[in-house]
Amino acid sequence: MSEHQSRLDLFIDRMVSQRACLDYAIARTAGQSGPVFELGLGNGRTYHHMVHHVQDRPVYVFERAVASHPDSTPPNDLVILGDVRETLPASVARFGASASLVHADLGGHNREKNDVFARLVSPLIEPLLAPGGLMVSSDRMYFDTLTELSLPDGAVEGRCFIYQR
Ligand code: SAM
Image 1 (cartoon, rainbow, N blue to C red):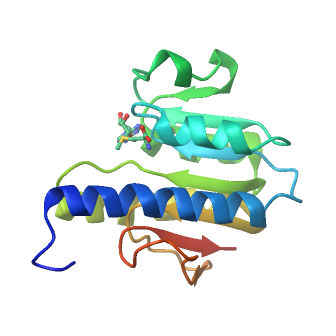
Image 2 (cartoon, protein in one colour):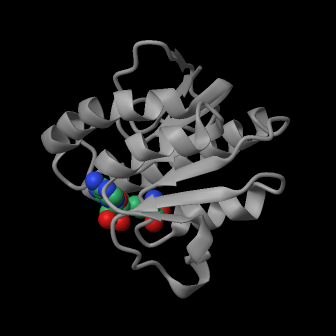
């Protein structure tokens, strides 16, 4: 991160990187049939982007409290409500290693807290990803068996991360 960057610059870099990484990951996993997982619904912008571009797979949302824009609110049967520290481990029995794409945007404004949380959830996400599946995250993750990929054109280093099983 450059010391000359304002918070607005950082925000724009994050948004541009999210879109570039999601578009890349959706295209690269298009041939896979496993579900897509959105971890952290928030306002629903990235969820809305994904359901617009993912045609062939269900998009499940993991969120502790749904409060998204009405246009970006998933159907109840595709919401896995609760804290991901509990819902991710419970989902291994239901889905196994089947997710073709996982997108995580669970962080807030505190970078240190986000890093602690990323270390905690990484091993909970890892067993849900199908072979060849991709994981896109706004925070650096800590996986034992996934490989970090180069970012696509348009994404800014450090603002988004892509991993492959
Ligand atoms: N990507 C979203 C968008 O484009 O609108 C923004 C996501 S927002 C930054 C983070 C979301 O993650 C919040 O809605 C928050 O409730 C959710 N979240 C954070 N920690 C969570 C946890 N432990 N379990 C479930 N949801 C969590």
